[in-house]
Image 1 (cartoon, helix red, strand yellow):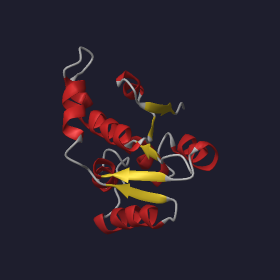
Image 2: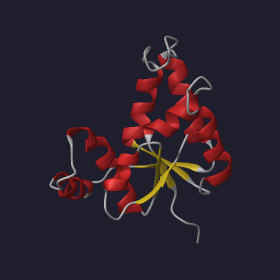
Image 3: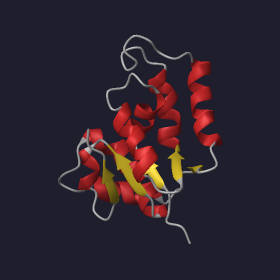
Image 4: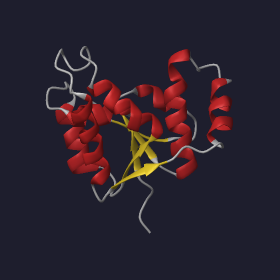
Amino acid sequence: MSPPPDLPDLNVWLALSFAGHSLHDEAKRYWNQTRRDRIAFCGVTWIGLPRLLTTAPVMHGKPFSPAVAAAKCRGFIALPDVEFIPDSAGLISQVEAWAGEPFFKAKLWTDAWIGAIALEHGCRVVSFDTDFAKFQGLDFLLLRP
């Protein structure tokens, strides 16, 4: 039986999506060398990626058109080793539990949602963001530039 998939954070998907990203090389290194056999999108990362790819400041003044951003996402999900994990109602209780912890700050809601999906499905979260280390019980791989 293969291990559960990696669940990359949005910052990893974004860095993989265009060569001009400052962390593109590190993201490609992860993709080519250290990722698990299966990779997953979730709702937050799936909708977040085209939103960022079409945002001028994020894309250094050269945003993708909505059609190109959608095609980029479609290209990822079409890969045989990439899957989509849907949200479930059970995520709410895990996010609420983390929200009650002293470390929890307003900027962690999305990370908590991704983390709850990872816990529910046994995934490893992969990110350039150290905040995921705060969530107890989470299998987490921190990518470093």
